[in-house]
Amino acid sequence: MHLPHNDLRIGLDHPEGDISFLSHAHSDHTAGLRRKEKLIASQETLDLAKINAQVTGLPGTKTMDAGHILGSRQLFVEHDGASAVYTGDFSLKPNIFGWSAKIPQCDHLIMEATYGDPNYRFAPLSDIYDQIANWVKLNDKKNIIIGCYELGKAQQVIKILNENKIAPIVQEKTEHFCSVYEKYGYPLDRIMVGSDEAEEQMSRPFVAIVPMHRAKRYFAKRLSDAFDRETLCAVTTGWAMQWRYDADAAFPLSDHADFDDLVYFVEQSGAKKVEFFCGDGREVLKKTKHPLILATS
Ligand SMILES: [Zn+2]
Image (cartoon, rainbow, N blue to C red; front, side, top):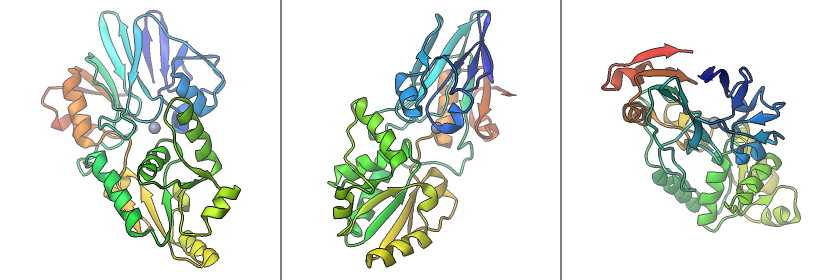
């Protein structure tokens, strides 16, 4: 996928073209871009992804907050008297760090449609944050493991826990991402697994952030046996709206736009042509009020 710009082609989270735009640091977007010498990206994204490229820009283009994770950006391009926007992954709902995507006016919109299904309509994030905090408080005599994607979701959940005076135990990968959040002014109180502090913390009921594949009842049972203390597990993912998980609790916490947000974004952007990636946007187009051309890339 790419956008034309003057006599250049800009690759969109893709190595093709004369220069590439990297929207954010999730690994499904960074693949193929690790060896680039120059990228249109935020410095936060390069630090999170440990990519040693030079941040660059092009006249007639600009990047804007995408509200998805630290450093996530949309790309706005003007070419031949028309404007185009590539959203990358985005979220319109302001999150616990205060980030949310702005909606740019454009002629051509290339938009993610991860939740382009009308069954996915999320509550305000503050409601989900409260649900997580209340569940943790209710179970404060037990160990708790919370499954999170290590970048983005984990930092939101750590911040929720911090606001409830809990410093969770984290693993190495999450620790790296937290340290980059801190570098850019978002402090997160957490304890590295394997440290003396973690050992001490685990002598009483504790909360740990684990990768999603670990947040299962069999793993919680192993911890219950090892610590001789009941352990509960939870998952945090937007897919919890519809899917069942082998966990004691499932919170529909997402850093993506939900169905209504996708519809709203299309309508507000004024785009005459819309393309989708990461999902099927046909239901979104049915719902929007303007006649639109669905183009597939
Ligand atoms: Zn992402």
